[in-house]
Image (cartoon, rainbow, N blue to C red; front, side, top):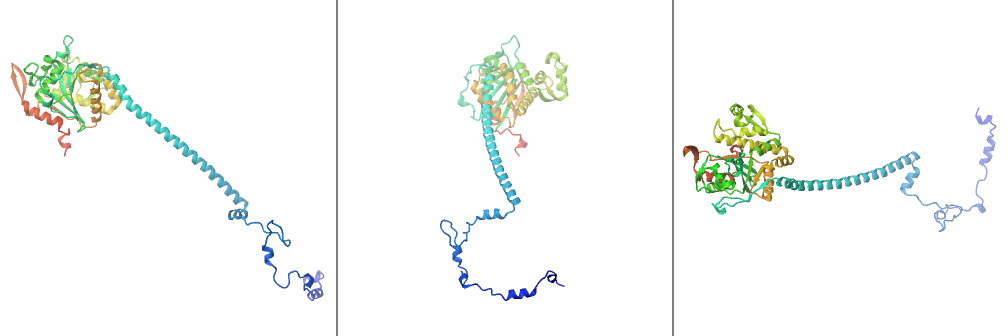
Length: 416
């Protein structure tokens, strides 16, 4: 049986309700027979008053407000946290930018300081080194005019004289044991070395006669050697630098020695003659020689000729330059400072500084070597009972000028 019957449902009552008059009495029909006046709901008083007991709707929220209104609370919290994180990240980025900017300024300041030190330090160091050197007055060549000599603004020629002066001798009148022209060639970016053999038979202007080249200093001092080379070979020499053997030893020791490949014959010559070479012992093979050993090596002359002797001298000078190249400015300064007090020159301080600066720039280039007399331009001769080297002066003059001023300093296989 239906549930309603149990609960006392009376179907007759439903029928009576259905028959009831549900029409609206005329005096209570406020809207009439039409639709409600919609304008009444849309109009709003200027002061926000309520019409017909209907409150005017509040202004519509913006899209973002609506979105926030209908977003779940958790989502809104996450978005707010993200915005805070973004704001914090922006502050951190700004702080990083400021820090980087400060670091860049600091780096620039450091760079400026370093550059200043690099520029000033050589001047200060050079000033200290140059103050230790002995300076002679420059004496102009009286025997040949400057216009008759080959010269170039890109080449500086310095005559290096090695003197083995004894204690009872005047160093300037003693014979030059080593004569090597160092040509700093800024055009070809190299340093050229030219050895002049001491037994070369030449005209000595100060003597007004012929004699061995190394005897020129006994007639007119160091400038007399310069005059003789200029007169015979037609090249302009800017000045001389004189060093005795003690300076040579100090120079080599200041750079920790020089590397030289010593032959067995050379080692036996030095080791077997302690009186001649000062009790120096040499071992054959690729050796790092001390200053004393390097000097003994350069003085070897009994086992071969003066050509070989000058070759050994150039080998040691080349090794010194190579050591200087490896060490950089500090090693150059150490070398110069240790040897300066043993040096004598007729160049001025400003000339030395200028030539040294140019030489440093040329260290990365080649170091070609030559000797005078050149191959095929000489022969042995007997003069007054002594064996000397007779040369073709004009041929050597022509070849020397070409080598110093026109050749690029590369070996033949390097130009291919």
